[in-house]
View 1 (tube, rainbow, N blue to C red):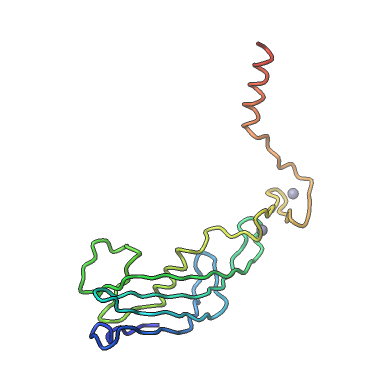
View 2: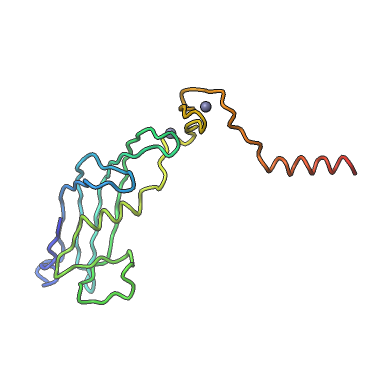
Length: 170
Ligand SMILES: [Zn+2]
Ligand SMILES: [Zn+2]
């Protein structure tokens, strides 16, 4: 949703309530958003500067990084940014604390999607101790076992073994 903050810029209002439903149809790094979700927020005149606060409970689906099983998660996104108008040249345009209002309009969808990308974990696991897939036969080790030789000797043990052997010699 595009928010018109002109009433605040003109001093007609000190606060604007925002409420809309957002549907994210694009896929972000294999993450999908199956449902439309409600977004709430506020634009506030803080006497000298303007803030935008947005919050949403975002439901998303992703594949487990180890076993590839699809998982559905929910995450609460809440953030606040200082609004700057496009007449101000930002020193650092990538500054995440700011959001630009172009001619008095803020793209709330874009701001929220950016924040979601920032906050979602990079790796998703179906459970903390997911055993993943066997790298040889591809079987799901959470539900099945196989007899593939996948255990490689831990090189740290080689060092330890050598130390022990050296000790024996002395
Ligand atoms: Zn898994
Ligand atoms: Zn296997």
